[in-house]
Length: 274
Image 1: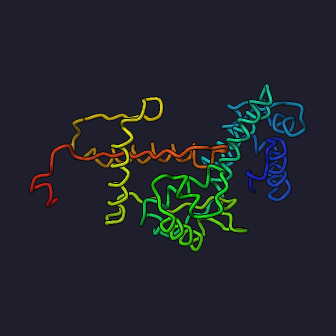
Image 2: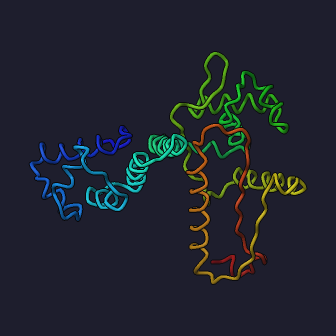
Image 3: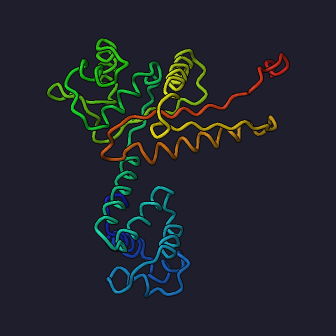
C-alpha cells in the first residue's frame, strides 16, 4: 500500500487495517498485538475518528507494519499535520511531506556523465531557483562564470540524459527529480578536476563578508582503522544536507558545499603500498 498517496493518517490506517482484516482475515486484536498496543478497540476508534493518535503510538504502528525509515517519517508527519495549531505550521509540515514524496519517487540514474564537468551541477541548481531561462546566454550571464557555448553543450547533454526538460525553448527540471548515483571514491580525472575547481572557487569566496559564506575546519589525529568511519560520517552529513535542501521550494541562490578530508602530511612510501 502506497502511504505517500495519503495526507490524512486516519484514511491511510483505514485502508491499511481493511487490507489486513478483509484480505488476510486478521482481527483487530491481532493487529493491536502486532503493534504492541494493549487495546484492540483503540485502533478501531482511531479510524472512526473517536480517538486521536500520538507520535508514540504512531511509532509502534510503523514498527508493527514494518514501515521503512522514509515511510515512518512520512507517517509521523501526517500525525503532526493533524495536530498542527496554525496554517503556517500546516504549510511547513506539508512542505516536509512533499520533499519526502519527491525523494521517494526520484529516479536514480545509472549515468555517471553528470560528474564529468563541474558546470552540470551548477546549472541544475540554477534551474531550481525558478528563474525563467530561455537561452544559454541568459544562464551564462546569470552565472557570471560560464560561457554561452559551455552552457549550450551542458544543456543539450543533460536534456538528452533526462536530467532536465526543454519545452517551448524554456529549460526546467522534471516534475520528478532525477539524481545520479553518488560520486564517492570514483578515481578519475574528471572528479579530481571538479573538486579542484570548486576548491579554487572557495579560495576566492573566502574574501566575501562572513554573512555571505561559512568556512569551518578541524584538524584531528585518528587511527588508520577509523578512516572509513570518518568518511562514512562525512557522507551521512552530505546526504542529510541534500535531503533537506534538494527539493526545497522557493530557492533563490546557489551555494556549493565542499567537504574535504585528507591526510595533513604526505603519505610515506609504506602507506602508498597499502
